[in-house]
Picture 1 (cartoon, rainbow, N blue to C red):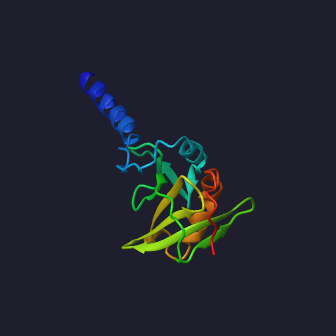
Picture 2 (cartoon, rainbow, N blue to C red):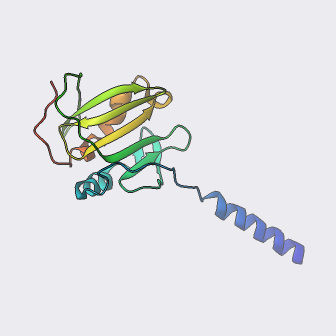
Picture 3 (cartoon, rainbow, N blue to C red):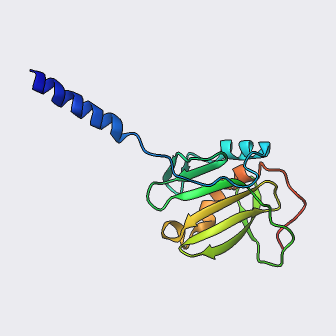
Length: 153
């Protein structure tokens, strides 16, 4: 009888612990405490690229997926005027400018023309040919940051 209770307790404990995952360690951006980041981060989708949101360790950050997570950080330094190519991502409600570059096995995208800026790190294994599709899913939230007068060219 006692052995059956311990076995039942062990099974219940294993089930409870299986739902607990550690937050992803993400360094906060320099301006993560900017109040406008709260509006942006509260509006990012719960599902991105078919992946569920995952807890992170820092303010104004979010991630999606467990293996090869997509990571968002609000409050990175907004890019100034640039001659780099800016990609416009259109949704039904906004057109958002993004500066996109390769960074090893990831795409690194930063909003352009908004401050605070939102940075998205998208593993190529997740969206190598469709990084703009992932960015479109967060563009409505990113557009909540005030504009700073710069536009994609």
